Each structure stands twice: as structure tokens, then as C-alpha cells.
Image (cartoon, rainbow, N blue to C red):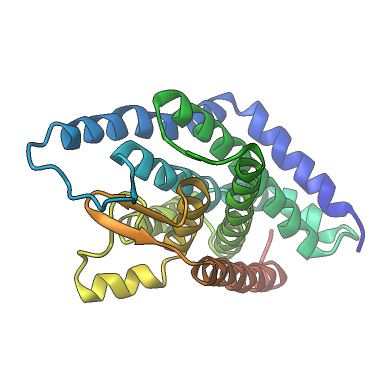
Length: 278
């Protein structure tokens, strides 16, 4: 395989850096989630006279630590779900026509865009992780240096597959619609159900059965499982809920995200091949 996708990737990163307003918002918005929502909710729960039950011998994490993993996951979701909008701009302004007419295979475009989306997610999630630790998020407690490195690599492996899946989905949708308003509406429509039917901000154990079913097929749920497993360990309590993860469950979560990324890659590939570009 050639390396034409690297040109597309480099162009995506230049665009990310040069659009100062977009870059600022992308970095500040998740930090505000932690700073405002996370600390406010943590203070509310800590001042509650009815303390959440704990299990002797099991680590109990506060809400800020619990939701920090969810904020990292949502950051990757927002970054990549709206990442395909640049392709719509390219299509409407004739740039995509020139790219598709070049000797470069069309799938190199989606690979380059996918790598760009993954890199942006890495940058944002890394910054959120550092910012969270500064605020008092208790990740990697009791971990050795080697275990911490392994945990960070595990988190970024989950972020990579999840981000690739959603950037491919976003790219495919952008190649199938004709207006910026349409793709914005579709992305907004997807964002809220994905966020609030997952375990990013709270436990899903109290959900009604039908909502638990939706949560069980929500890719965001599997990403959050992976992040919490690597950042908090396989046995902890939060908000009165006992969380136990096994290696098999985490492997299944990773496999689900791999399947999701594969399906969205095929969707984007077909969208590029059948796109009508003027």
C-alpha cells in the first residue's frame, strides 16, 4: 500500500492547528465538564447526609474520578463524530473532486482522515487526563510505574479503535449528504442518545430494561468500560454501585469496538465509491 494517506493526514492536522477557534473550543469544552459539572456534582454528593454504601476492602472512588473516565470517552466521541464535516466542505468546494480524480485510491482519503481523528482524540484525551489529575481525579491509585504505563497504553488503545469507528461513520455520512445543516443535524441527533444511554456519567444498573438494552449496544459504553478498567482497576465502588471487570469482559469490549470500526470503515468506503461530487 502506498503512503498517499499521509498527505491527507498531514492536511487534517494542519487544519486542526490553524483553526484557532475550533482548536480552543475542542480543548476547553471537556475541561469545563470536569471543572464545573464534575466538581459541582462531587460537592453535592459529598455533602449528602445519606452516605453511599461502601464494601469493606473494595476501593471507593468519588464522582469526579468516576465521571472523568466518561468525559474522556465523550471527548473522543464529540471530536470524531463531527470530524467528517471538513469532508463536506471539501466536497462542496470542489476539493474532493480533485482528490478523487487523483491516482490516490479513495480509501486512502478515509484512512488519512481516520488517522487525523485518532490523533486529535489522543491530544484531547491526554490533556483531559492531565487536567483531571491536577483537579484531584484519582486515576492509577496504587499502580506501579510500569503498571501506569501499561494502563495508559490500554486506555489509548481503546480510544484509537473507538475514534476510528466514529470518524469513519462521520466521513461516510458527510459523503452521502449535500448540506452542512443536514450533517450537523444528524450528528447532534446521534450525540445525545449515545451520551445519555451510556455509563459515561452514571451507572446503567438502575436503567429500565429497554434502556439497558440500548446501552448494551452503545459503543460509548464499551469505551468507558475499557477506560475505567485501566484507570481504576477491576474492582471498585462508585455512587453506591459495585463494579467488577474481568479480563474477558474487557477483551469483549475491545472486540465490539473493533467490529464497530470495521463496519463503519466499510460504510465509509462504500460512501466514497458512490459519492456524487461536483
